[in-house]
Image (cartoon, helix red, strand yellow):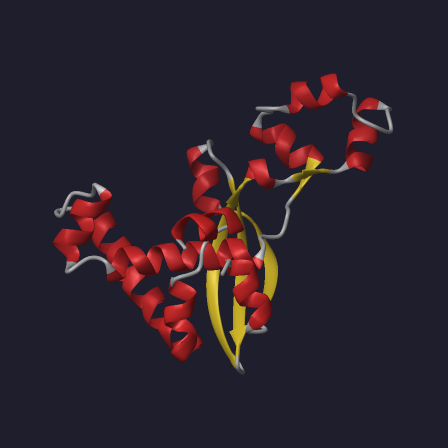
Length: 176
C-alpha cells in the first residue's frame, strides 16, 4: 500500500499553513527552504510538526512572470533559463507549493524507521554517519524518538501498517 492509499483508506487529514522561508536557511544564504506548520489528523487526534521543502518544489507564478517579462506564457527557453535560478528569482517568480500528505507521511515514517532500527544512540549514529560526540546528532536522535512516539500515539493499531507503506506502486510490486 502506498502512503497516499493509506491516507485515503484511513481518512488521514492534513492541515497546512505556510510559515515563510525557514529563518536558519536565510542566514546560511544557500539551500533556502519553505517552512510549513502541519497537522496530521487521524481518529480525532492530531500530530503537529514543522515540515520544510526546498525552493525547487515551488511553482512558477505566471502573473509574476508576466509583470517581469511582459509575456503571458514562458517559452521553453525561459523555463530552461529559470532552471537553477538564484534564490532571489525563485522567491520573486515562484509560489510555495503545499506539501502533499504522502510526502509528509514518507518523511515521518523514514525518521521513525531510522529510530526503530537503531538499538541505541551509538547505533543510530553509526547507521547515519554521525559522530557520537556530536550535539547535533543527539538532538536529531532525540527528535526522531519524540516524533516516533507521537506517530505511534496518533496511528495506534494502524502504526505497523503505516510502517510497511511504500512511496509508490512500483515499489509495492517489487517488495510483494
